[in-house]
Length: 359
Ligand SMILES: O=C(O)CCC(=O)C(=O)O
Ligand SMILES: [Fe+2]
Image 1 (cartoon, protein in one colour):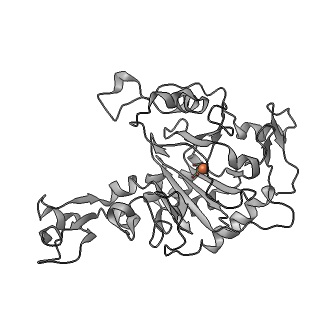
Image 2 (tube, protein in one colour; image 1 turned 120 degrees about the horizontal axis):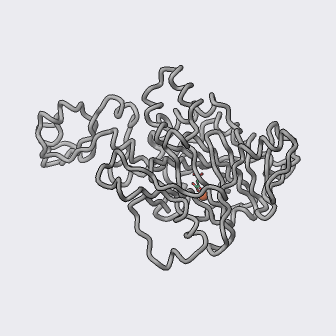
Image 3 (cartoon, protein in one colour; image 1 turned 180 degrees about the horizontal axis):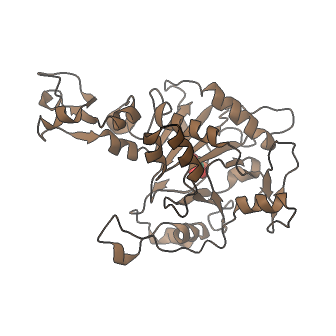
């Protein structure tokens, strides 16, 4: 499902309309800048066909005609909600989260959500990792304890458990380069997903109820229940049971896919965008259907329910450059709160939290 700027795609996959749109919006760099990674310049991309719900919201407030096919929903929600004429079950709530809420969920996504027993993409290789964000700020290094080859672990003189443990940088460098190690900041940069509540097993593409898990935090549940209301049948309440947190760095993308592992597709997926702006592609039921492209900004919420659950979707691009990322207010807030480590992370990242009712 995931890809990155370096991923190559078999030719036949490029034949679908969805794949062509992914290619159109994906990050490519100008060739002339290839030699120097720092100065690489993104190739310009034509964004004229990307739906912009910020300007749609403005038009709505000013009573100006909306783009063809965009329909405001009358549902009594406390913010404007838009639907798309030819994608029933899809709802867009621009700016649904306040800046404070955005900061709160960004911080939780970095600090508490990746904590065991929640799983992350690092589990398969390193096992559970505690306090990754703190370790990254303290410039710690994760070191392999090689069992019999235990000189790798500065604290173990002979034998010891197999596994990985954080150490201070100087403890590791004094040991030389014989041990397998990776810096916490590299691991934080490579964090791609964490799962909350019922744990999603990516290898089986299913929920594994036998895996230990904690309930989704109550504040997040309450928020998701409220945000889900425009897509819920009257009188029914959304029951958040599982969530996937996606972390995107520059050049990362989320390939076209369906989320079809939940039992009841009439219930929405509540999807919150945080950090740098992205392009979201909402396709149809077939990869051959031309997708609709739209910007997702920090604070936007998307709901996918009913027929929209059968639509391919993905994120081909995030914008991490100051001109396009649209995170000034977020940056200001983190600076005011002296949260410079979070600020550093989010200025080149996007986080998506999508919350699901599984049964
Ligand atoms: O990042 C997004 O906005 C979409 C995420 C998504 O589709 C998923 O995790 O299934
Ligand atoms: Fe999805």
